[in-house]
Image (cartoon, rainbow, N blue to C red):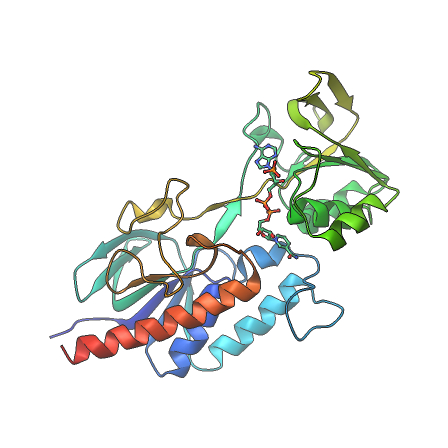
Length: 311
Ligand code: NAP
Protein backbone atom coordinates (compact mmCIF):
# COMPACT_ATOMS: atom_id res chain seq x y z
CA UNK A 1 0.00 0.00 0.00
CA UNK A 2 1.54 3.27 -1.06
CA UNK A 3 -0.26 6.59 -1.20
CA UNK A 4 2.50 8.67 -2.72
CA UNK A 5 1.74 11.60 -4.98
CA UNK A 6 5.17 11.49 -6.62
CA UNK A 7 8.07 9.09 -6.88
CA UNK A 8 10.49 11.98 -6.31
CA UNK A 9 10.09 15.53 -5.09
CA UNK A 10 12.97 17.95 -5.60
CA UNK A 11 13.18 21.15 -3.57
CA UNK A 12 15.03 23.95 -5.36
CA UNK A 13 15.21 25.05 -8.99
CA UNK A 14 18.90 25.89 -9.39
CA UNK A 15 21.39 23.89 -11.49
CA UNK A 16 21.42 20.95 -9.01
CA UNK A 17 17.62 20.72 -8.75
CA UNK A 18 17.00 21.09 -12.46
CA UNK A 19 19.61 18.47 -13.34
CA UNK A 20 18.09 16.07 -10.80
CA UNK A 21 14.71 16.80 -12.42
CA UNK A 22 16.06 16.08 -15.87
CA UNK A 23 17.56 12.73 -14.85
CA UNK A 24 14.54 11.64 -12.77
CA UNK A 25 11.91 12.50 -15.36
CA UNK A 26 14.00 11.01 -18.15
CA UNK A 27 14.06 7.80 -16.05
CA UNK A 28 10.23 8.02 -16.22
CA UNK A 29 9.84 8.63 -12.52
CA UNK A 30 6.91 10.85 -11.58
CA UNK A 31 8.79 13.91 -10.38
CA UNK A 32 7.85 17.30 -8.98
CA UNK A 33 10.28 20.20 -8.60
CA UNK A 34 9.27 22.89 -6.10
CA UNK A 35 10.89 26.31 -6.35
CA UNK A 36 10.23 29.12 -3.88
CA UNK A 37 10.78 32.03 -6.25
CA UNK A 38 12.17 31.85 -9.77
CA UNK A 39 13.92 28.94 -11.44
CA UNK A 40 17.67 29.33 -11.88
CA UNK A 41 18.90 29.95 -8.32
CA UNK A 42 22.08 31.95 -7.74
CA UNK A 43 22.95 31.78 -11.43
CA UNK A 44 20.17 34.28 -12.10
CA UNK A 45 22.53 36.93 -10.74
CA UNK A 46 25.64 35.82 -12.64
CA UNK A 47 26.68 38.19 -15.39
CA UNK A 48 29.06 35.98 -17.26
CA UNK A 49 29.73 32.30 -16.64
CA UNK A 50 33.10 31.56 -18.16
CA UNK A 51 33.71 28.11 -16.75
CA UNK A 52 30.66 26.16 -17.88
CA UNK A 53 32.02 23.90 -20.61
CA UNK A 54 30.68 24.23 -24.10
CA UNK A 55 30.37 28.02 -24.13
CA UNK A 56 33.66 29.56 -25.24
CA UNK A 57 33.51 33.27 -24.51
CA UNK A 58 31.03 32.61 -21.69
CA UNK A 59 27.27 32.77 -21.33
CA UNK A 60 25.21 34.90 -18.99
CA UNK A 61 23.61 33.15 -16.00
CA UNK A 62 19.91 33.77 -16.80
CA UNK A 63 20.39 32.60 -20.43
CA UNK A 64 22.09 29.42 -19.26
CA UNK A 65 19.35 28.75 -16.70
CA UNK A 66 16.60 29.31 -19.30
CA UNK A 67 18.23 26.56 -21.37
CA UNK A 68 18.42 24.27 -18.30
CA UNK A 69 14.72 24.83 -17.63
CA UNK A 70 13.68 24.21 -21.21
CA UNK A 71 15.72 21.01 -21.19
CA UNK A 72 14.46 19.54 -17.90
CA UNK A 73 10.74 20.04 -18.65
CA UNK A 74 11.25 18.37 -22.05
CA UNK A 75 11.10 14.99 -20.30
CA UNK A 76 7.89 15.72 -18.41
CA UNK A 77 9.22 17.19 -15.16
CA UNK A 78 6.43 18.95 -13.26
CA UNK A 79 7.39 22.24 -11.64
CA UNK A 80 5.55 24.42 -9.15
CA UNK A 81 6.20 27.64 -7.27
CA UNK A 82 5.78 27.33 -3.52
CA UNK A 83 7.55 27.42 -0.20
CA UNK A 84 8.17 24.17 1.63
CA UNK A 85 7.12 24.66 5.24
CA UNK A 86 7.72 21.23 6.70
CA UNK A 87 9.31 17.89 5.91
CA UNK A 88 8.44 14.66 7.71
CA UNK A 89 10.18 11.33 7.41
CA UNK A 90 7.47 8.63 7.52
CA UNK A 91 9.87 5.84 6.61
CA UNK A 92 9.05 4.61 3.11
CA UNK A 93 7.26 7.88 2.44
CA UNK A 94 8.37 11.48 2.93
CA UNK A 95 5.71 14.12 3.51
CA UNK A 96 6.15 17.77 2.55
CA UNK A 97 3.88 20.61 3.51
CA UNK A 98 3.93 23.23 0.79
CA UNK A 99 1.91 26.35 1.55
CA UNK A 100 -0.53 24.42 3.72
CA UNK A 101 -0.99 21.41 1.42
CA UNK A 102 0.58 17.99 1.95
CA UNK A 103 2.46 16.06 -0.74
CA UNK A 104 3.97 12.60 -0.37
CA UNK A 105 6.86 11.03 -2.21
CA UNK A 106 9.16 8.06 -1.93
CA UNK A 107 12.43 9.93 -2.37
CA UNK A 108 13.21 13.54 -1.62
CA UNK A 109 16.06 15.58 -3.11
CA UNK A 110 17.02 18.78 -1.33
CA UNK A 111 18.73 21.23 -3.68
CA UNK A 112 17.94 24.53 -2.03
CA UNK A 113 21.34 26.15 -2.61
CA UNK A 114 22.54 29.16 -0.70
CA UNK A 115 21.76 32.85 -0.19
CA UNK A 116 24.13 35.85 0.04
CA UNK A 117 25.47 36.59 3.53
CA UNK A 118 24.71 39.94 5.14
CA UNK A 119 27.36 42.10 6.81
CA UNK A 120 25.14 42.49 9.86
CA UNK A 121 26.00 46.14 10.50
CA UNK A 122 23.67 48.85 11.65
CA UNK A 123 21.61 50.44 8.87
CA UNK A 124 22.37 47.69 6.32
CA UNK A 125 18.89 46.20 6.24
CA UNK A 126 17.07 49.52 5.99
CA UNK A 127 19.24 50.60 3.06
CA UNK A 128 18.58 47.54 0.89
CA UNK A 129 17.28 48.93 -2.40
CA UNK A 130 18.51 52.42 -1.41
CA UNK A 131 22.21 51.86 -1.93
CA UNK A 132 22.84 48.45 -0.39
CA UNK A 133 22.66 45.45 -2.72
CA UNK A 134 23.69 41.81 -2.87
CA UNK A 135 23.49 41.52 -6.64
CA UNK A 136 25.48 43.60 -9.13
CA UNK A 137 23.65 42.17 -12.15
CA UNK A 138 20.32 43.21 -10.68
CA UNK A 139 21.21 46.69 -9.40
CA UNK A 140 24.45 47.80 -11.08
CA UNK A 141 22.77 49.92 -13.73
CA UNK A 142 21.28 52.19 -11.01
CA UNK A 143 24.79 53.49 -10.27
CA UNK A 144 25.74 54.97 -13.62
CA UNK A 145 28.59 57.51 -13.23
CA UNK A 146 28.59 57.13 -9.42
CA UNK A 147 31.14 55.95 -6.87
CA UNK A 148 30.39 52.61 -5.25
CA UNK A 149 32.06 49.94 -3.11
CA UNK A 150 32.13 46.16 -3.24
CA UNK A 151 32.79 44.31 0.00
CA UNK A 152 34.55 40.93 -0.06
CA UNK A 153 37.63 39.23 -1.47
CA UNK A 154 36.34 36.11 -3.25
CA UNK A 155 35.40 35.32 -6.84
CA UNK A 156 31.99 36.93 -6.47
CA UNK A 157 33.41 40.21 -5.14
CA UNK A 158 36.00 40.36 -7.92
CA UNK A 159 33.46 39.57 -10.63
CA UNK A 160 30.98 42.08 -9.24
CA UNK A 161 33.63 44.81 -9.00
CA UNK A 162 34.66 44.23 -12.60
CA UNK A 163 31.06 44.17 -13.82
CA UNK A 164 30.22 47.36 -11.92
CA UNK A 165 33.00 49.29 -13.67
CA UNK A 166 30.71 49.24 -16.72
CA UNK A 167 28.43 51.68 -14.93
CA UNK A 168 30.28 53.34 -12.06
CA UNK A 169 32.98 55.99 -12.27
CA UNK A 170 34.88 54.37 -9.46
CA UNK A 171 34.67 51.10 -7.55
CA UNK A 172 36.32 50.55 -4.16
CA UNK A 173 36.97 46.90 -3.42
CA UNK A 174 37.06 46.57 0.36
CA UNK A 175 38.65 43.39 1.68
CA UNK A 176 39.46 42.43 5.26
CA UNK A 177 42.85 40.91 4.36
CA UNK A 178 45.76 41.93 2.11
CA UNK A 179 45.20 39.33 -0.60
CA UNK A 180 42.21 38.18 -2.61
CA UNK A 181 41.02 34.59 -2.57
CA UNK A 182 40.10 34.72 -6.26
CA UNK A 183 41.51 32.92 -9.27
CA UNK A 184 44.67 34.46 -10.76
CA UNK A 185 42.86 35.46 -13.94
CA UNK A 186 40.30 37.50 -12.00
CA UNK A 187 42.98 39.10 -9.80
CA UNK A 188 44.88 40.27 -12.84
CA UNK A 189 41.74 41.79 -14.31
CA UNK A 190 40.90 43.54 -11.03
CA UNK A 191 44.41 44.95 -10.49
CA UNK A 192 44.68 46.20 -14.05
CA UNK A 193 41.30 47.94 -14.05
CA UNK A 194 41.84 51.67 -13.55
CA UNK A 195 38.38 52.21 -12.09
CA UNK A 196 38.98 49.79 -9.18
CA UNK A 197 40.78 50.93 -6.03
CA UNK A 198 41.67 48.24 -3.50
CA UNK A 199 40.99 49.02 0.16
CA UNK A 200 43.02 46.31 1.91
CA UNK A 201 42.81 45.02 5.49
CA UNK A 202 39.55 46.86 6.03
CA UNK A 203 36.02 46.20 7.17
CA UNK A 204 32.89 48.33 7.00
CA UNK A 205 32.38 50.03 10.36
CA UNK A 206 29.42 52.29 9.57
CA UNK A 207 27.00 53.56 6.96
CA UNK A 208 25.74 57.12 6.49
CA UNK A 209 22.56 57.95 4.67
CA UNK A 210 19.99 60.65 3.99
CA UNK A 211 16.43 60.51 2.64
CA UNK A 212 17.63 59.44 -0.79
CA UNK A 213 19.70 56.53 0.53
CA UNK A 214 23.34 55.65 1.22
CA UNK A 215 25.72 58.62 1.15
CA UNK A 216 29.02 57.21 2.44
CA UNK A 217 30.69 54.14 3.92
CA UNK A 218 32.98 54.20 6.93
CA UNK A 219 35.76 51.61 6.80
CA UNK A 220 38.25 50.61 9.46
CA UNK A 221 41.75 49.35 8.75
CA UNK A 222 42.21 46.26 10.92
CA UNK A 223 46.01 46.60 11.01
CA UNK A 224 46.33 50.31 11.83
CA UNK A 225 42.93 51.01 13.39
CA UNK A 226 42.55 54.01 11.05
CA UNK A 227 39.04 54.95 9.97
CA UNK A 228 38.35 56.20 6.43
CA UNK A 229 35.21 57.55 4.81
CA UNK A 230 34.44 56.33 1.29
CA UNK A 231 32.14 58.74 -0.56
CA UNK A 232 30.15 55.89 -2.10
CA UNK A 233 26.41 55.84 -2.79
CA UNK A 234 26.30 52.11 -3.51
CA UNK A 235 27.53 49.15 -1.47
CA UNK A 236 27.55 45.67 -2.99
CA UNK A 237 28.07 42.99 -0.36
CA UNK A 238 29.77 39.84 -1.69
CA UNK A 239 31.06 38.03 1.39
CA UNK A 240 29.94 34.51 0.61
CA UNK A 241 26.76 32.57 1.13
CA UNK A 242 24.72 30.71 3.73
CA UNK A 243 22.95 27.44 2.89
CA UNK A 244 19.15 27.58 2.64
CA UNK A 245 18.40 24.85 5.16
CA UNK A 246 16.70 26.40 8.19
CA UNK A 247 13.29 25.09 7.05
CA UNK A 248 14.58 21.52 7.52
CA UNK A 249 14.21 21.80 11.27
CA UNK A 250 16.74 19.10 12.01
CA UNK A 251 15.12 16.36 9.90
CA UNK A 252 18.54 15.59 8.38
CA UNK A 253 21.93 16.10 10.02
CA UNK A 254 23.63 19.44 9.33
CA UNK A 255 27.07 20.83 10.17
CA UNK A 256 27.68 23.89 12.37
CA UNK A 257 27.24 26.25 9.40
CA UNK A 258 23.91 24.69 8.41
CA UNK A 259 25.17 22.67 5.43
CA UNK A 260 23.48 19.29 5.05
CA UNK A 261 25.89 16.52 5.91
CA UNK A 262 26.11 14.47 2.73
CA UNK A 263 29.01 12.99 0.83
CA UNK A 264 29.58 12.61 -2.88
CA UNK A 265 26.81 10.01 -3.09
CA UNK A 266 24.41 12.75 -1.86
CA UNK A 267 22.98 10.46 0.88
CA UNK A 268 21.89 12.35 3.98
CA UNK A 269 21.45 10.94 7.49
CA UNK A 270 17.90 9.87 6.47
CA UNK A 271 17.37 7.02 4.08
CA UNK A 272 15.48 8.27 0.99
CA UNK A 273 16.49 11.92 1.45
CA UNK A 274 19.32 13.20 -0.75
CA UNK A 275 21.11 16.56 -0.82
CA UNK A 276 22.61 18.09 -3.96
CA UNK A 277 24.53 21.27 -4.77
CA UNK A 278 25.49 24.22 -2.58
CA UNK A 279 23.26 23.21 0.36
CA UNK A 280 25.40 20.16 1.12
CA UNK A 281 28.90 19.90 2.57
CA UNK A 282 31.22 19.93 -0.44
CA UNK A 283 34.59 21.35 -1.41
CA UNK A 284 33.60 23.32 -4.51
CA UNK A 285 30.52 25.38 -5.23
CA UNK A 286 30.20 25.70 -8.98
CA UNK A 287 27.52 25.07 -11.60
CA UNK A 288 29.50 22.06 -12.75
CA UNK A 289 29.63 20.49 -9.28
CA UNK A 290 25.93 21.27 -8.67
CA UNK A 291 25.06 19.61 -11.98
CA UNK A 292 27.12 16.55 -11.05
CA UNK A 293 25.37 16.37 -7.68
CA UNK A 294 21.93 16.63 -9.30
CA UNK A 295 22.69 13.70 -11.58
CA UNK A 296 24.05 11.61 -8.69
CA UNK A 297 21.09 12.44 -6.41
CA UNK A 298 18.51 11.48 -9.06
CA UNK A 299 20.20 8.17 -9.90
CA UNK A 300 20.64 7.36 -6.19
CA UNK A 301 16.97 8.19 -5.60
CA UNK A 302 15.99 5.92 -8.49
CA UNK A 303 18.06 3.08 -7.01
CA UNK A 304 16.50 3.67 -3.59
CA UNK A 305 12.95 3.54 -5.03
CA UNK A 306 13.81 0.35 -6.88
CA UNK A 307 15.13 -1.24 -3.70
CA UNK A 308 11.98 -0.19 -1.80
CA UNK A 309 9.85 -1.94 -4.43
CA UNK A 310 11.80 -5.15 -3.96
CA UNK A 311 12.04 -5.06 -0.17
P1 NAP B 1 33.85 33.13 -0.74
O1 NAP B 1 34.78 32.47 -1.70
O2 NAP B 1 33.46 32.42 0.49
O3 NAP B 1 34.51 34.53 -0.38
C1 NAP B 1 33.93 35.35 0.57
C2 NAP B 1 34.84 36.55 0.78
O4 NAP B 1 34.21 37.44 1.69
C3 NAP B 1 36.20 36.19 1.35
O5 NAP B 1 37.20 36.95 0.73
C4 NAP B 1 36.06 36.54 2.84
O6 NAP B 1 37.24 37.00 3.41
C5 NAP B 1 35.08 37.67 2.80
N1 NAP B 1 34.24 37.73 4.00
C6 NAP B 1 33.53 36.73 4.57
N2 NAP B 1 32.84 37.16 5.63
C7 NAP B 1 33.15 38.49 5.75
C8 NAP B 1 32.75 39.50 6.65
N3 NAP B 1 31.89 39.26 7.64
N4 NAP B 1 33.24 40.75 6.47
C9 NAP B 1 34.09 41.01 5.46
N5 NAP B 1 34.50 40.09 4.55
C10 NAP B 1 34.03 38.85 4.70
O7 NAP B 1 32.45 33.55 -1.43
P2 NAP B 1 32.10 33.88 -2.96
O8 NAP B 1 33.07 34.81 -3.55
O9 NAP B 1 30.65 34.25 -2.96
O10 NAP B 1 32.25 32.48 -3.68
C11 NAP B 1 31.48 31.34 -3.21
C12 NAP B 1 31.87 30.13 -4.06
O11 NAP B 1 31.43 30.33 -5.41
C13 NAP B 1 33.40 29.94 -4.15
O12 NAP B 1 33.66 28.56 -4.18
C14 NAP B 1 33.76 30.58 -5.47
O13 NAP B 1 34.93 30.03 -6.06
C15 NAP B 1 32.51 30.27 -6.30
N6 NAP B 1 32.34 31.28 -7.37
C16 NAP B 1 32.90 30.99 -8.56
C17 NAP B 1 32.78 31.88 -9.60
C18 NAP B 1 33.40 31.52 -10.90
O14 NAP B 1 34.18 30.58 -10.95
N7 NAP B 1 33.10 32.21 -11.99
C19 NAP B 1 32.10 33.08 -9.42
C20 NAP B 1 31.55 33.38 -8.18
C21 NAP B 1 31.68 32.45 -7.15
P3 NAP B 1 38.50 36.02 3.65
O15 NAP B 1 39.14 35.85 2.30
O16 NAP B 1 39.34 36.80 4.61
O17 NAP B 1 37.94 34.78 4.23
